[in-house]
Structures are given as structure tokens and as C-alpha cells.
Image 1 (cartoon, one colour):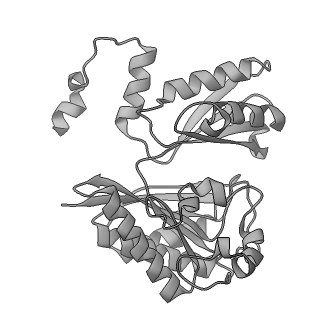
Image 2 (cartoon, helix red, strand yellow):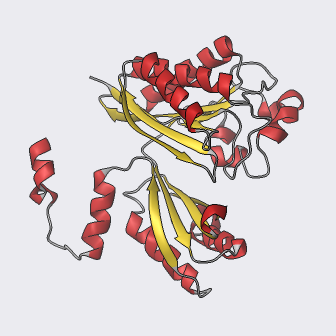
Length: 299
């Protein structure tokens, strides 16, 4: 049986009643299994994870997008996280008996459905991208180019012509829909309020800045905790494991006399990603994962 994971991100992290309604719509929209739902008030963003058969996940994602369009006005929404729309991103991730290419086809089908029926512009990214310049989401939706800038560009600039849907933004904004492998959202907190330090560290550890492969990183100011955060996406945890990311961030921070206070995983994470870090720090050089009781029971 083909199983996919879908992890839509919504531009609402402060109003629980709104996120609850979106979650309810998703669960009613398709026969899926909800894995996780969490809100981040600083980023003003909610991340919802669910799994199911491909068509069920498509239906559930469509229902969530429809509900978000009703409840979130992008002219009023503000937050630290980059965003294009109420339903900002919808990635499909292959879990079992399905290929990344098939997930890309699923993403395109949903993009067309949202564009045609909800009249929301959609952009295909990742493995689903039709335009090579949109393969990496962070390259075309940036801190300096978000919903506000897209409002004019979608009308005037051919570069921002959507793959599906109208060439103008409704109050629900636009939605990015794609296919990718499993991604870990990983954040590291520092005991400073200096954004300059956090930005330098982020630049030094991300791949585009000459740092670690498979790392996308930025800096966030966390007002409620009076500190800054290095916010990352790890796009291949086997190529660049968590322990390597943590150690490099800690080393970079020490250059400025800054300490790491804690780190967090935002959303879901594969067990093997944590096991790799545990094996490294505990120096379990001859350890075999078949020694783990839960893994043997699962098998």
C-alpha cells in the first residue's frame, strides 16, 4: 500500500481556535492519520503532519487549505517566518511503496485543484518544480520577498507567474506545493539577544555560505524568551547528522563568547536521526540497532 506524509505549514501560530478548525477540516477531508500539530507564536506559523494513502492526503490537504483561506487574512498576518500565503507550503514526502516522482505528480494534481477551485495561485517547488528556479523554495520566497512583494510581482513580473491559479493574490495569498524527501526542522537557542551573531553563525553553517551540506539556516529573534535562535532545515540527516550540526553551531557560538542553551526539533523526526546522534555522543562504536527492543518488536 502506498503511504505518503503531508506536512502543510499555515501562517497562523497565535490563535489556537483557528488552527483547531484547520486540523478538524484536515481530519474530515480525507481518511488520514494525524501525527502532529504544533504552533509557534514567534514565527506565527503552524505545522501539521499527517500520513495516509496518496489521494486521501490530497483531499485532506485541500480541505485544510480551503479552511485556512476562510480564516486567515494575509493583509493582517505578521510573523518572523517567511510566507506567501495562509497555507504557505504543502510538501508530499514518500514513506512506503511510492516514489518521489509519484509524490511530485500528486503535488501537481493538488496545485491544479487549489488553483482551479479555490482561485489561489500555486507554485510547484522541490521535486515537483516545473521551473528550475523554483526547485529551492528559499531562493524565491525570501525574507525580502514575501506576500507583500508578491502582490505586485505576480501581476507584473513573468518570473512570478504561478503554475496554476489566477495571476493575482486573494487575501489568502499563494501556496507553494511540492515533493521532497524527509526534512528535519531543527532550532538552536543562544544566550544572547544579538541578531548579528545569530546571522553570522547561520551564514557560516549553511551550505550556501560554505558550511555544512544539506543545511538551510537563518536567524530569528525570540522576543518571549529574550534570546536569538539559529533556525535550520536539515534536508538529508544521513548526509549531515544532527550531532554535526549541533557541534558546529556550538563551536561558532563560542567564538563570540556565546553559549547554546538548548535545541529543539520542530515537528516530526525519524528515529534513526536521533539514534545517530546518540551513538556518536555515547561512542557506541560497535552498537547495532537490532539491539533496540522497540525496533525488534516492530520488525
